[in-house]
Image (spheres, one colour):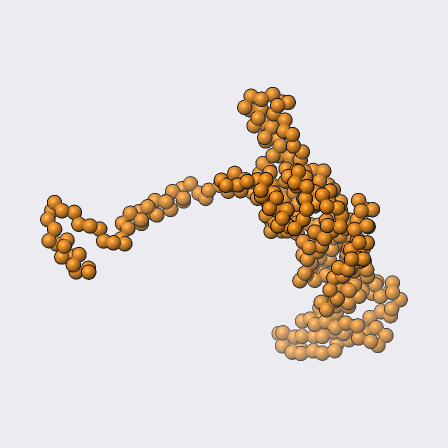
Length: 322
């Protein structure tokens, strides 16, 4: 076929135009090169919020958001939860620039500050009562560390971003700051509290916030610099004899990679054992193992108790606290 085309081209006169070879796009490479040069000069395009993109029905997306979470929201409250103060200020100033007076330019909307306050208050009270029931032996400092982790901005923003809350949030800034995302997520919790009550809101927190502890160690949340002193303090409160560290196993002592296993004995009973590259490090790890067992945070602990009785008591404590 190629030989036939070559023969036709050679036999064609100067006044005849040869047909192009099929599949050969001579314009493509210069076009792509020009686009790459333009993109390099102009930089990456600015991100556009999903609200400003075509084919976006805000009311339908709000209803779909409620259905995705399998929760019953008041649509008006849910819309209010997505409205930030910066959006209201920008819209009112834009209307005033168009020549409207202050009364006409004022929007008949409310920001999400009140809902965020209610959601934050209920979240703290519910998680506090739930963690106290789940880990009754954990001291106040450890309980506070767990609560601070679950209510931290990092965890709340992680959950909110995976729920695609940013696509529906009405705010002046884009991309949104972590403060705005956290506030909007807490406002959604407050809207659910007013729409469906504390029981459904507690289950919402149970489904999305408490699982953030999965795969985490107790001392990932709680920074303890001297675990042996903490262990001695806890044993003294329980009137248990003080621990006695003993080397149970060791390997490679004369090499650059030694390994020691230190066991802690109370009343001639082994309560914990931990490894380390030094005797001191192994003793600290054994103390951490003993603390995990004592506080009910060991790896082989029983699963979380989601029985109705415990959940109802958590809801009642959260209601009274709020």
